[in-house]
Structures are given as structure tokens and as C-alpha cells.
Length: 297
Ligand SMILES: [Zn+2]
Image (cartoon, rainbow, N blue to C red; front, side, top):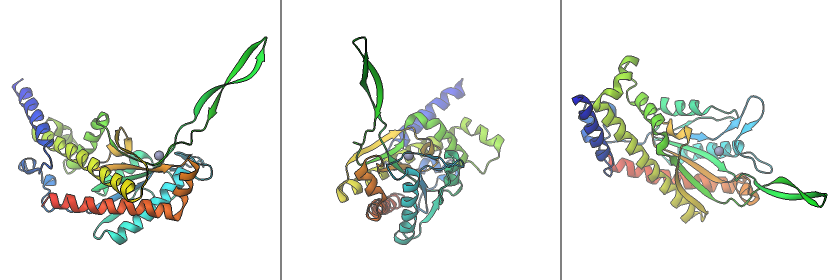
């Protein structure tokens, strides 16, 4: 009982500590988990995740426009982004979750990111609005109208949106963090990690830090896309996105535009459009890298 009260106290304390701006991990590192030391931190590895892909049966997951698919557009943007980061952001290694049209499972994407010790996960997607439904009169019988529900494509979606993981998926994120932070321990030890107050502090501190950094990077992206490119934006939102919550690092999903809006589909498929999107992400990444490296010194 006493032990439980102590744990509760430590848990509460860890939340308070983790919510302090730019919590430095000085306390967590003093509990002897080397992985927590962030002094002299360098952002070394960026994981680029081209959303969706083509399944073995030829179908593709994701949204479609009138002549292009999200799966193909995200791959084109991701490949351009890879080249641009390698050229313009020195000392950063880029890891791709896919480089071909073939779909990769969501879990596998996070596993690639975690195995490569990514410092930042950028998932590229295209948005789309679902059809709206309308009741239409299709005839009359005995003086009464006969109705049918028809689907009407909604092509009014416009602009960008940035998603970071929501709190309701935090258990899964916690699991990913636990595996990544304590991977050197064997399985029996791992299962005891969540009983260890020091580990609880560490995991909670990382969770809060990654969430804060994800939101910060998303805001930097939002500024580049809106203020430099003049794109419309639905802003930064929290959502339970599986591929984000399994990745034990700051992670942002970029909805680059609405593929089922004809004008935006043309933009997303054009060289200029793709280059503009890539340039915005690279600028935001540059600012983010400079800031996180500055903070940890
Ligand atoms: Zn998508």
C-alpha cells in the first residue's frame, strides 16, 4: 500500500516536471538511464514516411483524385523530400519507410522508424473529403414521390493540415517508448519496467517532450505553408493516428492538399507544387533542428 502511494506521488510529480517548458531531463538522467541524457543533442535521423501504397492485389490504400492516387503522389513528394534534406540539411541521415509503390504496413513503418532511432518522423499524406449524400426524387408512384439517396463528390476541401498524435492513443505510444528506451534489457526486465518508479518518470517525461516537440514542429510547418506559400491551412490538430503513436519520437503527419479537389490535385501532381511543399518542409526542419539542438546545450 505504501509502495502504491509512493508510486502515485512519483507519477504525479513526473507529470508536473514533464509539463515544464523544455524540461531538461536533468532529474531523469540522474536516475541512471543513459538514453535520457540530451546534452549536446543532435538531430541525426529523419524518417520520411510516404503514406499508403499499392497492395499486392493492385488496389491502393488512401485517397484518389480524378487521375492520380494519394499513394503515388505521397511517394513522389517523399522522394523529393529525401533528396532535398540530404542536399540542404547537412549531417542528417534520411530513412524512408518506403521507396517503391508497394504498400508497407503501419506497424512496419513505425518499426523502421524506431529501429533506425529516428529523431523526427514526417508522414506525407494527401487529404480528401468524403462524398456527401443527397435524397433525390427519381419518380412517382400513385402520386407519391420515390426517393433515392445519391452520392455527391465534395470537392470543396482546400489546403494543408498537420496532425500530431492525440492523448487517447498514449497507451500505445507508451508501449513504443518503453520498448525503445529500455530495449537493452531482456524481456523479463522489460515487463518490470513499468513497475519501476524511475522508469515511469522517464517514460512520462519523454511522452510530454515528444508531444511538445511534435506540436512545435507542426507549428513551424504551418507557418511555412501559410506565410511563405500562402496556402490555406486547417492548422495543427491532435488525432489518434496509429503510425504516429507507435513511433517513439516526435512525429507529424502532413496533409499536403486535397487530392479530390481538381485544382489542388493539379498542384499536388505538378513539379512546382511538389517542390514548394518540399521546400516548406525543409525550411521548417532547418528551424526545428536549430532550436532543439540549441535548447539541449
Ligand atoms: Zn492518407
